[in-house]
Image 1 (cartoon, rainbow, N blue to C red):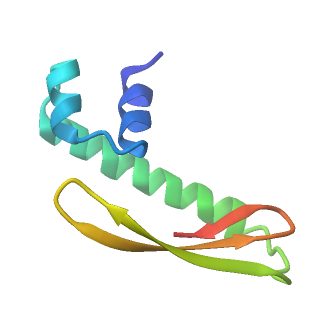
Image 2 (cartoon, one colour):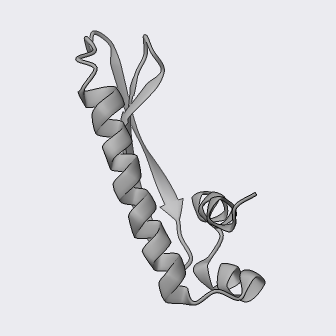
Length: 90
């Protein structure tokens, strides 16, 4: 498996950058760069699949969750289209 896929998967599951750096011997700046590039790509996929699809938003559910991060606590809002179970945004 490609190391980038492993790193992004670990980040998505909340693994700290410092743990990834220690495990794979990467530079922290490299991990942050990969994170930014993956974020841009995900935004492009979201725009293409969700915004470009012109889906009728007849029933959308929104919710929020309190997320504890390594050094802070944040609130994250999410929206889900019920008919397709597509995440509309976070």
